[in-house]
Amino acid sequence: MPMNDVQKIIEKLQEIGTITSYPPKSLVYMEQDTGRHLYILLDGKVRCYRYDVKGNIITLPFHDIYDLLGELPANGDLINYQESCECEVECTLLRIDSLLLCRQASSDLNIANFLIERLSRRSRALAQFSCINTASSLSEKVALFIYEHEEHFCSLPINQTASMLNIPPESLSRILKKFRQNGILDNENGVYQVLELEALREYFDFAYCGG
Image (tube, rainbow, N blue to C red):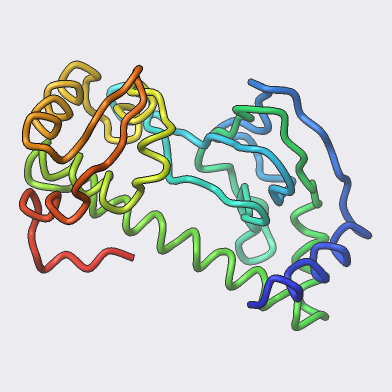
């Protein structure tokens, strides 16, 4: 969907929602809370995460501007949020009553198409992330993550990257050290730079398509 069309839909949705500002580290919603509202990211950066069966925090894929946060009702009933969401920096979100949004989408094809597109984007991101997290080795997992998310990898703290990959930070550090020794990565003043992106393919199955 062209960005101009997306912006027009956002303007229309503002008529039934509320624009809210959140300071850094604010919790927008918690996992298993009733999903009474759906949120659209207008500005800033959020982190969504959930807990695995061992109680470890698993950080979920990244969100871009105008992405959806939260859950839509199923068969007319509210469902619980499947993750927690917090603001990493000051954020602006459009909060919309979930049931009201569904009613609006049922009578407005443009809004319905917007929701379908954004939910499909999230589904693809989760599927891709699932592929990364089921890699056969830690080296393959880290290589896939860097290959698909180079920009994010270079800007994230090591602890957060380790959380997303569900591996100990010290294990991640060992793999990154190996990549540096092989000339794939560079680290200057604590900031990583990818020198040989395609060289990461040596660490994972060439049948992997990504996306």
